[in-house]
Length: 242
Image 1: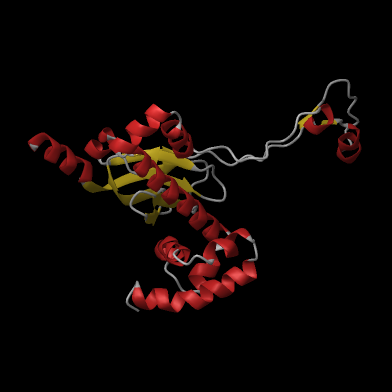
Image 2: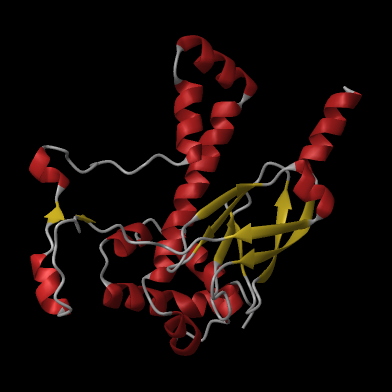
């Protein structure tokens, strides 16, 4: 019993993890930092430094318009050092493959581009994927739920329940990131008068409304802005005490 209580206390230990985001041209770029386990968010300063509350085994989610999404699990070493360095990679849009062999370039860019043959994988019977790639949490949940014995063991030890909660939190974090990226940051700060460090908390507040997801995924910025305008005063009064 003593060992179990000690393990439980250790698992619940939390601290304010300090960190630094390393990326090309990070100056002035603000990254959405979300603890999807605790449903808490933060942003970095202009130098890339940040601070967020964590416990061991929590999942951190780093997202922005210009960088690839990064998912990090908080381990014991991070808890002991109290510091985390996160390297983000810039988003790269994948273009069609271009054949450049046997082409005599003239030096006229417009003419040369017209003569370059592109490769379309549909032309040779290779379809584009229709389903999004599974996240690491989705893959773990699939593995934990596959096979009668694995399913039984994971139901008994609570792994599936924990993974489903993490999956739900991850989906919520993705929705919030889209809700932030849908409008320029200046709209939140200047028009809605929300302090920049509280923008992510405001969008999490909006995401509690079941209607929010449809507004975000329908990609109607004006309707989304009207929705934010209807929510902002309540958020400022009830959550920030204004």
